[in-house]
Image (tube, rainbow, N blue to C red; front, side, top):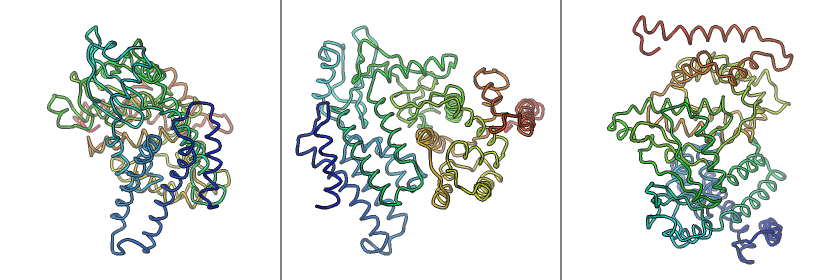
Length: 501
């Protein structure tokens, strides 16, 4: 019996005894694990042989090879179905794991997911809401306006006249995803026990986090509650908008919300034609994420351009709250500390934050690691911080992952995803985007002017030494200096007419 068969047999047996109804036949419950293992294994084998020069064109440039293989991987994810399409989309923001050509190709998965038949979608609406679609709605489109990995969206109109977007989940999605994740967990455990191929990241933790998030994303009632929580958090932000949820037409597999007209945040020409500034909208988007991460502890984890629209009145609308992240108070405090270390250009402090955030295992030589990472950040940041890209820093980190016991904590998987997606949007909208120009007004407005109780407490906590609990006077001095700069620079700029400040 081959190794692939040995790996697939226990998976098939476990799937046979699943307590819920499975969409797979008995034969498929055996062949599906084999198909997954074979599809992924043969891809990795071909990549290995190609780069060893045993197959393919020997004179082909590395970049061309990477892009060719990336296209093949994207097609394989599509062939494996919704679980792997979603994994591909998640990997498209992980430059610490994959080269840029892979990131570019996997990003396209967002727009290449095929729709499923209307008959299935309308049958799900009837099963979930108790009536046929045309009995529930005055109008419903005869084809979806968007199709994604987990569902598709139809435009419709309520009998009371409101335009709505009706999201319908893919058939049999829950058992398919659970089965596939069980297969992946077995594969990862197998590789961790027998090879060093997965060194450098908490793969089991990332799978756990992915399973948690995709499980929540498949519950449309939870998504509706997430949207309402997000709306409440930004209730005093007049330039932000969240569509209304129509609960009487919503269930765990059907979500009906207010239909919003607008243009994607990356469509600079359309935004400018409407009389709005793409640069200002991009900065609003980043300030909104500072608030979500550092204040609310609750953030939209999938901010790709399809989920962010500029409305006809210039408001920034957020959609699709199936994938959200929750940040603990302790993690927020550490992130606030890292935020201020970046503003202060305190790279030694930033290294300490990486250690406290569990990016490093305990046996690492901290003195040596501090020197390496400080040198990396100084090379990237010390000359011109506007040229620094989160993507580039991730690649630089990739060079030291195998030298040190460096690991991306599972809790950071979706934070990193959100930040890298935001950066991708910013590069398209405003190539000269400067993180400091956005971060400094945020620090001034939310900490020194608005006196946010939660964030102020976190800042005060960050002034204490983590180990001793005593006040860190160097930190207080730095914060006072920063506070003076944040308060004084706009006034000085006004006097001297320096609009850059």
